[in-house]
Image (tube, rainbow, N blue to C red; front, side, top):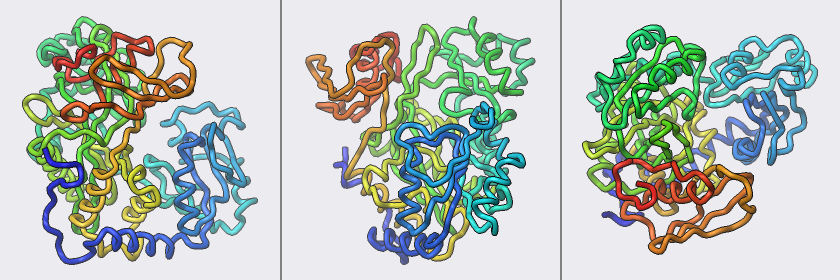
Length: 464
């Protein structure tokens, strides 16, 4: 296994090749664009997660003048001069409903914004899923084009996997009614761990595990389909691939791609109930050189097809599982997905604004080549790997503060806050530096011993 700071990388082409040149090029372009501008943020949740974006804007010379939000301000939200909340108007919206509301926000918010910005000079900035070009007469910077959003539909993505030769599980796409009439499709497709049922995007995007149902025992198939029927017209029924959940982020630049290192997407499962618990991500994971090449190659082929067919620009991710038979893909997210780990490694790099600048073709970034950017990011993250994990407590009574769990062979240092545990260090790490087994041990300590890490057949002590 290669040392963390010595991952293999392709020779760099002519152009911007030095990491400091990349940082300087990005900083200069963003300062030229954002310096002196005022912006209004369009946020589904206005809380501590907004801080990084606000800090980037301030660092690039912009001022956040107002926020239009679904909820908030929540704990840790940054100070902003003006806030308009949907909840203040009696609007209790889900995230997909909020994105739909942004298309027709009503006269009240129009009047509120025009009183603050009568000449409509502000620039609006939304979430990675905001799909409108203008909001209340103001341009939206980095908005998601419909042809890009369509790729995220889990019932159509297999066409891209087929065109690019990327492996994916055996599957069938049916209407909800068809799936309810023919529950035996789960028996035909299912493997030892059953099937996964995924909702389409007909009623808006559903993230994390909200649009997924794991059905380890096929007699529960109709219940899973019925649950998804309220938010979908079609479902994808696929064989459950028992492997390490993982993702690889990449970036489509003008004329080239940067494909970064795979990360572990830490997901725990309850095989008896078919429950999935998403805990976050880890950049400590080291799958080995051959597996890393396979995962990155799949992302590169998928990214090239994404660019060819939709003209996509910016960050995207390919998610899947590393099984005994290799990597199998499950979804492609054409947006800024979490987990890259660059903010932990290089805190002052304005990744959010860089991504949106690439999407909007902001001048001054054309000299950055994919190979140079991927060398910069991969080296930085490998030198400073990080966890972004939260294991929920199943029972109350765990005091806030630092704690330690030891099973005689390893030690997990973690911190408890707000009913969840955040791993800080795992000593010694496993051979591949996976965090999933440690999170399963923590879940048991916090009152949920049924949760296991994947793959389910691995000998992970208490997690197997």
